[in-house]
Length: 218
Image (cartoon, rainbow, N blue to C red; front, top):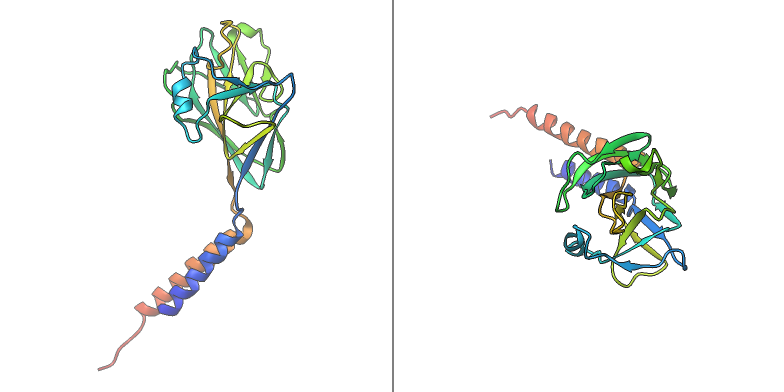
């Protein structure tokens, strides 16, 4: 059984090396059309955003791109909170997800996920609301959608988890708390990873069967 354990550990180690090292989302911004601002005191999630790690104390709109790297990855979208006079929706690959109810603290409600290759993300995710007459605003390049940022970043920001806030037409406050979502990127196990895991399980099973069928004579 000791040999079986050694082989299993080797298989698990090989599987770990076969996994992507990370799954990164990078938001790019800059210039006069995309200035960085501090999160407004009227944003009902201001303190919750600041309490995250890293602390999200700033935001930018009209950002130029959100880039996926280290593919294959799974993109997951979560509803974090909503505070609005209108009823709003986030549309993900053609399916609308409503606010359901207003919240005054950040939550973490899973909406959906999809596989994504390397490249630009954005057209898959849009926002709209009852006061917008059917107009949808893309995640990227819109003055109605902000990405929340830590203090001190410039030009770009990378993480495997990004927070976005939508500002509807129901109020002129411009605080981007009318529908807050979180988008995460996680590695998809590569074929070699699955093969190593299956091999490891097979080795354990074989070792256990041999152990059960051993006959001792006295």
